[in-house]
Length: 310
Figure 1 (cartoon, rainbow, N blue to C red):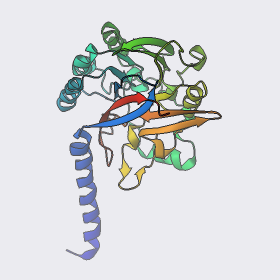
Figure 2 (cartoon, one colour; figure 1 turned 120 degrees about the vertical axis):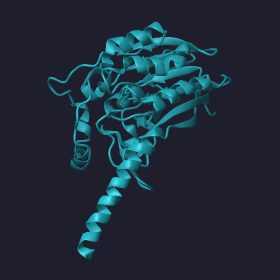
Figure 3 (cartoon, one colour; figure 1 turned 90 degrees about the horizontal axis):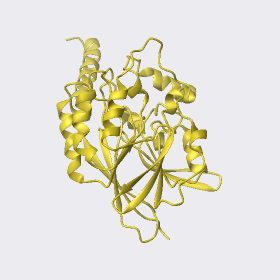
Figure 4 (spheres, helix red, strand yellow; figure 1 turned 90 degrees about the vertical axis):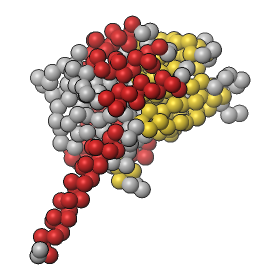
């Protein structure tokens, strides 16, 4: 074979092998991460919070369903679901079945854009172009394309509500988790401009043992508002951890205006005079039209909340 043909063929073979790995192996290599966060009052017992996000369920994803069911074996004190459960309008029953064992624990949820709207194909290169241009996921000004079918999200909401999970759609709630009273403040998805912070402003519930802030997409306006109001911990998803990352470098995009170094895991967020912990879940799924992950396996996180350091 002539040398001039070898390089293109080798490059093509490498690309094909990477695609098979990214979609067939890594996207199905589910992980559980464990993180400790010191946000409880002195003397409080540890609180175990299971953070789930971006399930993006498609009918027939049996391995993902079994893995989600197995997480009930952790026996968390509280489950927080930060949205984008669906990537298939027919997958609500399978999503509820997969989460069924976890619905027996105290929980709360917000929805993301993919809960409300059926997925459509979008060129993944668009997100990189936005990052390079400085538009950073449209700064929260994204809107679903016209004529996009809606998902049957009310069925999902009704199942969560029937199980006793708190709906945090631009509202507040209180739940009992282990021996602690946890106050929760949530926003609807900033990515499609459904967040209404004015409806929940006012800061943490001082009568609760702990106050948490919950949102799907970690746009800076939401993080700034929660942090300035004094919330000690914010939970979010949406970013997929960058989804396609460069080994030993990290994420190239976040699909919002959050900086790439904080695209997943535990970090902090600061406003003048205030500092909050921020946990962004890399999620355990992907849009059905881009079912790839590279150097960013799907995950859930068990957060162990501990007393604040003195």
